[in-house]
Image 1 (cartoon, rainbow, N blue to C red):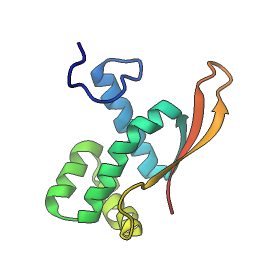
Image 2 (cartoon, rainbow, N blue to C red):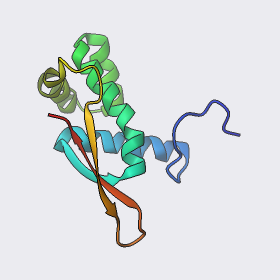
Image 3 (cartoon, rainbow, N blue to C red):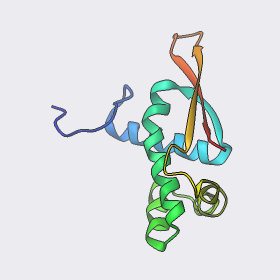
Image 4 (cartoon, rainbow, N blue to C red):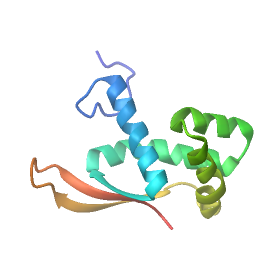
Length: 117
């Protein structure tokens, strides 16, 4: 039963879904623009928004929370020093999803997922 379970399954078990979301968040923060499926982008959007909000707070607790999700000191430093200051005047909605159309092989809807400037 899925009582009190939030989020999409993404066709995998819980640990693989968590790993997919972590990988997408790391890729977006590293490259600031990635191409992925629409479902994955919509699901990982909450994770990235949370990390950037922690970066805007800037305290040690937020840094440790971001480190727990990302697992890389350099990425956490990039979020807190480079990315978060760009969004000081914005209260959320740090990413944009641009639809590209269906993928050729399996007809999955593909999008470009990027940070808003």
